Image (cartoon, rainbow over all chains, first blue to last red; front, top):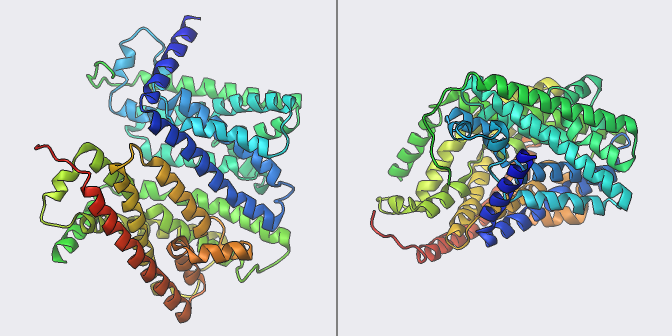
Length: 260
Length: 261
């Protein structure tokens, strides 16, 4: 309970911090909505010309893209430091979080808000509304799908960035991994053969971030819900384990200081 | 011109200082090419056609390889200039005996060359393995010349976005939108040939197609008339955007206040 209170206090402080530059916050939010809308036009053009990809049509794309964008936005807003955790580790800046009586990983990743994440989060809902599938019940499924998709994405980021404990700098690897994750998450799953799908459910769990939650948002089945729950919790546990293992190898950067 | 060539040469050599970084960043083209192969193989098979609007799976993949190379190798110049404006380091460059814009043009070219070469090498190897040999070598030098034009065009737009930091707090929204226009109107993910006719007309009239589509299309289907058209289009846009950039730069300097340091 205390941890939850701490987390809410942290998010409130982060939000106040980004809202200090209100024009910048709003321009990033609306800029990101516009950015995603323009990007999605590519898929509208594609499906207008080629109709569908092995049964995957533009409606599926609206839902998949919406969930992926919102999940990305949610992580950017609430756990913005997952994107540069590797850098924090490599520069010895975990010292600050280690010196305080709060869970190190949670404190570190939740200490930053990426303002443009609000644009991604909002865009996801607009995309879902544009799919024509919006009903009160489907909206609830969509929100649950976003939460589980965001869990997978956050866990994947922590896992990849934690490799910095062993590699020193994991910036290139994490850039490639994150790009691959997002790219594979928004492409139609029907493109891939079974061996590629194994990769998309394990090594780069993009199917848990895009296709599976999109399928759940469209049609409720206990089987898919269980798969998503199992996938996201297993990945989260693995990510925390890897971080904790890495933390044993961490070398202080003598960087205990006040974070402003 | 000698000093700008020297700046270009120094940046070019600097870009080789961290070969791991250079290769690491270029690896990103591999998953893109693989997923494009999946997408277009399935799409062509579903359409039951060997060729769609003059492109086969093989030529589409080689087109996308060059288009991605142009996009992935261009430096994030907007960020560099915007940071210089925000932290005041622009004053350092302005006090030196060289032109601010030409200095950045030389450094951005220097940063781009090896990054592009590495992308072509890795992306080309992947596409060769997936769909077979590259197109007619006659088109390679022609495409190379127009890639230089594409980078110059990109420089004009990116520098203007960077300089807008004199007016707005944050330029990221402009950068994202510019990038997405280059994606969609440049034909980065889908060749313009697959667009509806009305959109092709609009896209081909704008500078984005001269930055991505035209060089990549020339690469897969080389011809001297296409080369001449592309070059003419690029020169016209470089002249227009270059003048706009110089005007924008001079206006921006009016906003600059240097307080010692």
